[in-house]
Amino acid sequence: MSYAGKWIRTESKINDTDLPRITQEYIKKNYPDAIIKEAYMVQSDVLPGYKVILSINQKDEILNFDKSGNILTNTQSTNKKINVDEQKYKQKISIQTDYLPANIRDNLSLSYRGFTVNKLFWAKDNLNNDYYIIELVDETGSIIVELEYDFLGNHISQTIKNIEIEKQEIKDKKDKKTKLDLGIPETAVPKAAVDYFKKKERRVDEVKWDTLKNNYIVTYLNTVRGYRCFMEFDEKGTWLQTTIYLDTKNLNPMMSRYINDNYPGYIIQSVENVATNTKQKYLLVKIYSPDWINDPMVYHQLYFSLSYRLEREVLADAVNRYDFLELQKKAASLANTQKYLEKVDNIIDETKMYSGQAVSPKSLPSGIIKYINDNYAGWLLKESMIIEENGQYLYNIYLKKEGWPDRVKLTFDFKGNFVNQEKIK
Image (cartoon, rainbow, N blue to C red; front, top):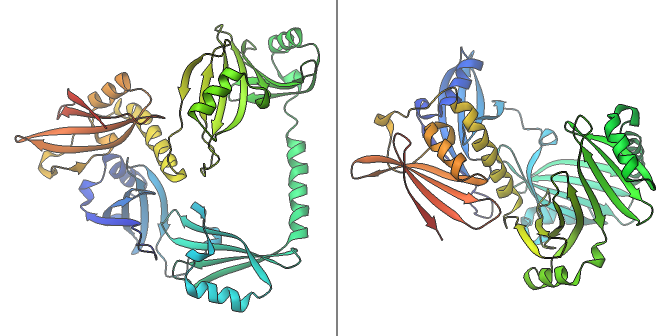
């Protein structure tokens, strides 16, 4: 539990044979001489999964796995104090000073007179350790002190920075970024792409060629209209798409009315006029709520025809940053599961099952994964479990439509054959 009494994490001891098959295979392959000392199923809102403690040459090593059984981190056990400077925080949320324990507030008032709190965060690393990160600034604004405390208020570290040095470092980084942001030379671009671009856009400025995965892109300023533009080509130089970034302040009244009526208070991030090589033409409007605290930003995407009629909406889930990242991991895990199941079809030992037992996606029969991929593309696998009805084991699979509130429960028999579906409100 956290200092404030919030549940953080539950670890339940399990047998090593209850670990996902992919986890067991990873340990056998990478730690052939190790002995599994203890195994735990980890329940958490942040990084649920499994924890395994191995004994290697009389030394313990901890391995962490996600819910699908994939390796996350491994940390050798040690009695030394964790160096938090080396930790990469998985969570970092801005909080008010009222949330700080009293002993931290007392320490700040006694030891850092003349300094004021500039920034204050509650943070959590990938091992679920909680910290307070406090940034103080002096009266002149030239000295910054960064402090770290554990969740009980014990002081951990202090870093003092000179703001003038920081400004110079930022300037150096910007200069370096500018030098690296020159793109690629035109001679490195397929001739077909260069010829097409020059034929279509004769009066342009600030032209920069670059690569996007295997494709080529060119960004430029149309000097006639004053618009920023973006053109994309495939690896052979064939034109794929042109995007013109329109002025967000000059949105068509019909589009503005729709956004104001359905998304009051939302901010328009961009308006894009898009034309593709499949003869599709549309206006893409990206909007977001000013109260959105997630990082990276997730936008609501509204697709309008050139006659300003709404054709499609892709809505961002109203979830916090960490839930969103977890959903991304689950989606990626589901997508990779099919590749894994092409090599092996998992069979769960019926003698070690119980009703309500959670099941990793990679432990599901391939028939279930195929049915989901064929009929629920774009849905996220929220939970899968084994249930017992009338003396028979079944699989219950809970899916959520990405970007929408729609939820559904699918039921399959133990061989992976579809039984029924049920919409969940």
